[in-house]
Every structure is written in structure tokens, then in C-alpha cells.
Length: 437
Image (cartoon, rainbow, N blue to C red; front, side, top):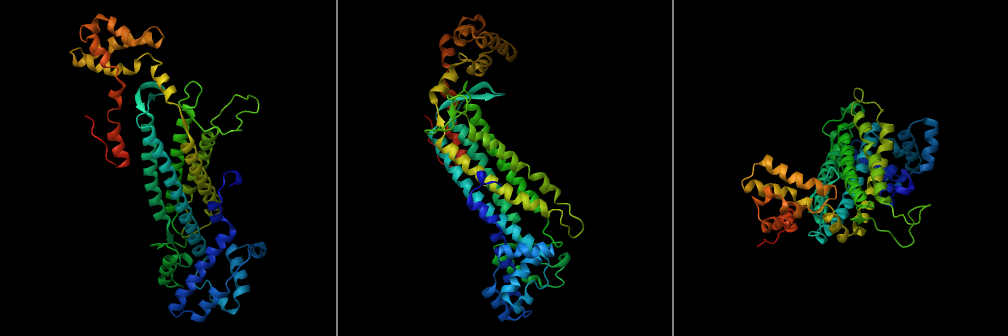
């Protein structure tokens, strides 16, 4: 987590001040529940809220001596609360505080990520409708295939990130649990109703069964979903990087006035933002394996997961937050070049219509094997830059025997390939589309 790729809204969640504030709220809410149950005096619970305070530096100082962060926090808290501090942490264990806090932080991080995704979806939708009918060549294996529209490329990204948003909502729900169950999770020294109260106060659900720790399969799922989102970011970033290649140049990252592309070559305009997004996606995905390995803890509890989560929690959420916002900016300002798209459509001299010729020949009575042979033998010279596909087809007697010149010419209509764009948009965006007549 470095400042270059960090937004303050997300980093604030992981700052020590925020963490210890959550710790205090967990302890204070537990005291409220204990007071309601008659376990501790109500006056003590009130005093804890009124006098409760802490200092990060003081906690660090104490921890250097006691070698235990929760004890250091409780010691500092007691310095402010006074004698009533003896009622704090009644029947609780460190994991009750640590695990519940970690889940609160992940839930808050998920809320920011969901807001990020809403912004990204809005930007993608805007560009999709803007270029719904902007025809460009589709590619398979990076080779020209058949026409699509740039709007369809954006619609595909919209559908993918819509699925990712649903996944993140589910991951947020799965991680939003609270454990206040005491040593080895049996509630021997604390009533389950305390856990229910704290969970409700923090907007969480009580963990059905915690073995002193909240089960880490929940966290493994959460980080896995973040990795899927990161992979989708990379997918769209890679598409843009390809489209910005000099030989393609159908779309390009915005190049601001005064921006420089290379320290050596003044002419360069490099896709640095989308290349950066590719790298950031790798960092987020790198958190998944440690999260999966955290699932298998020893017996009711060990702390092999603790050092891992202190790293991957902030790292994954901060990095993904930055990446989503950066991608939104890229899409919002993306330069699109329809004239270059048309040039690339024309580059292969009509070969992008080969399948339609193949189908027309079969419908005219030619076997599929012969039709494929006929189309391919006329296509290969064009591939080598030797002639025009339509002219070669018209000159082929096998083609002429099945299709007239007029029928051939009608098969080179770009509109044939885009006639269902509105249908696809209706499926993706859930909006009515006009019927074509």
C-alpha cells in the first residue's frame, strides 16, 4: 500500500486510529449488552462510553513491552476509563475483537468498492450508447474476423462488471459477521446475546459458529471475488492497450496537454494507464492464494493467518479501489477513432464477409465442403494483398454458377452484421429497443 496507488477514502479504513476506534466500539457495545444482562453495572457501561479514549502512540509503547496488541489497547483504554475498566473485555478473547474489527473494515471497504463499480458502470454505459452503431472489426486470435460495433465491446464490459457487482454484494454479505464467543468459541464466559447485540450495533450478523476465530472460508471467498474483479479490469485494459497499438489505433487513452510519453522519443503516446491497471490487477490476484491458505487453521485457533491479513486486507482493497477509479477515468476520457475503424474494416478487401458467402453458397445448393473450398481459394490471394475479394468471387465460374453479381454484392452489407445490436443492448441494459422494419 503506497501513496502512489492509494485513495484517502480507502486508506482511512486501515489506519490505526480507525482500527482502534472499531476495537473500542466493539468493547463498549459488549459492555452495554453485559449491563442489560446484569453482568456489569449500567453505570460502568456509561462510564466506558464517556471516558473511553486511546492514543496510538501510547498503545505502541505498551505493546513493545507486553508483546500483545489487544492487551496494549486495553491497558491504554483503562488509563482513561479508570476503575470501571475492569468490566471491559469480560468473557471475551482477543479474536473476538480482531476478527470482528477485520470484518467491519472489509465491509466498509466493500461499500467503497461497490460505489466505485457504480461509477465505472455508468461510464461504460455512456460510451456503449455513444458508439452503439460505430462499426469496427471483431477479432478472434487477434486476427480480423467479422464486424462488430464498439458499443458492443462496451456492452460486454458492462455485463461483466454488472456480474462482478453482484458477486461483490454477495461477498460483502458473507464477510459481514461478528464473533463475540470467547475462548474456543463456546460462550462459556459470555452470553450469546452479547454477540447478537454487538453484531446488530455494527451492522453485522452473528457468526453461527466460531471456533474462537471466524471461519476463514469467508475471507477466502471475499478475496477471490476481489481477484475476479481485478481480472475483469485487466481484460478491459488489455483490450484498450491493443486498440491503441500504432497498427490498430481504433481507440486511445486521453493524452493531456503537456503530457510526455517517453523520456527519449518525443512522438510517443503510450497506454500507460491501462498498462498500470494490468500490473495492479496482478497485485490483487496475488492476495488470493494466501487467503485460501488461511482457511486451514489449527484446531480451534492459531494466528498463522494474522500476519497475512494485516497485509492483504489493506493491500487488496486499496489497490482495487484505485484501479476501479482509474479505469473509470480511462473509459470516460477514452479517445475513439471511427475513421480508423473503417480503415481496418477495409484492410482485408472484404474478407470479413467470407462466412456470409459460404452460407449463401450452401443455401444455393453447393455442399459445405465445396463452398468452403471455393471461398477459401478466393480469399487467400486477397490475404496476400493480391486483389479484391468481391472481384475475385465474381470472376470465379463456380461462384457465378450459384450466385449472381447482384446477389454477391448484397452479401457485403455491414448492416447485416449489426442488425441485432439493439437486441443485445436490451439484454444487457434491460431497456426497450426499437423494432427494426
